[in-house]
Image (cartoon, rainbow, N blue to C red):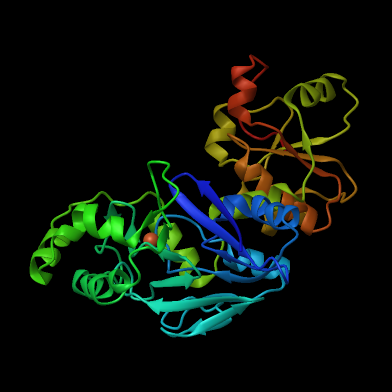
Amino acid sequence: MIFEAVASGGCRSYLIGCEETCAAALIDPELSQIDRYVALAAREGLRIRYLIDTHTHADHFSATQQLARQLDVPVVMHRSSPAPFVDLRLQGGELLVVGRLRLQALHTPGHTHDSMCLCVEERVFTGDTLLIGGTGRTDLPSGDAGALYDSLFESVLRLDPALKIFPAHEYKGRSHSTIGQELAENPRLQKRDRSAFIEMMQNLNLTMPTHVTEALRTNMSGGKTVAQMLSEAAATVPFMSLAALKACLESGKNELVALDVRERDAYEEGHIPGARSLPRGQLELRVNEELTDPTRRILAYCEIGRVSTLATATLRQMGFQGAVALDGGMKAWRDAGYAVKAGKDPS
Ligand SMILES: [Fe+2]
């Protein structure tokens, strides 16, 4: 079996492949690592056949949906997953065939209702059900401490003690553990009594993971993250540097229209000299009267460069093929000591 682990922050993803057939499965891919997974599979001569999420993640952004589109392969989750974009829904006990490999799904609710572990050969991918020296938390949506106890003690921990466990999170750099080692040493598993285990889990008082609402929103619906919206917009627009804009404006050749897409009061407080004001929120509705020449070079800027990237992408979608975004924003312009003008839009 070909095996690669990818660490991204505290998250772990795994690429497993069949040496004979070159078929592979990717477990718990994370959005920021998409290029790495595709490159790893290519380096190992593997073709990814399945994209598997062990559960609905609340603490990071799953890459399954985007990779599914990119690679034209199915997204696999447990059948109780709320995500509408899942193509193949597994029940506990079912197998996924990856070349000569057989991945067996175990339904292990507790961390979430849709959690599953996947056993293949001498490994078990435990998602957030069983971590090295820990367990998944049970205080996030669909978590259930009693169910986690049952999943652990009646299912996962009854597997062969020699099986190696590979969790979806690991914060101390350890590559794996074994079922036997966890039974012996994992502090959370020393509470063998069900009610004592539940009480322990209910009193952990953990802080909320960052991006929890955005992670749940996007992972459960297939919607896009803010970072995705920005990077998709950025991929469709050219940028102009602050220095190039300054030179352009100082040349006096009237080569471009500088468009301030911040709110009107920010513009009036201080803008790039010669810039016109067209707030992002009014862009589509006012563009026809404000920008009458679609062939004109238009440079959009905002305070830090994000809103202007979105605005420029919108302008280009609308047919303003000369639209560019400022690489930076009004803040960088001020910090560079370039000229700033206060007052109302002259037009
Ligand atoms: Fe999780």
